[in-house]
Length: 82
Image 1: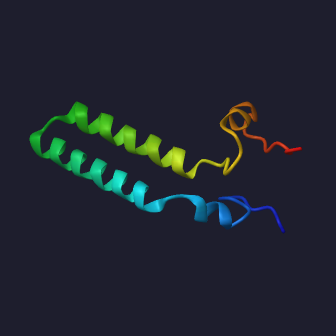
Image 2 (image 1 turned 30 degrees about the horizontal axis):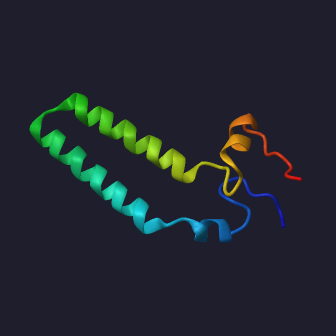
């Protein structure tokens, strides 16, 4: 199978993710951002937006099913698993 640039190489890794939970989290964050913006609480809006970006980064981070410790030590380079 050819190497892919974005996303996991095996489609089954995407199937393992519980998307309903992530969609609920995003919907809840969007509502909190909307409410804070409506109230004019701009520092809270900024912090919630940063939280959403971090959430997306965690969901879509390259690393798939590897243990977190291996992902941290890889330095962006895929490690060969034994």
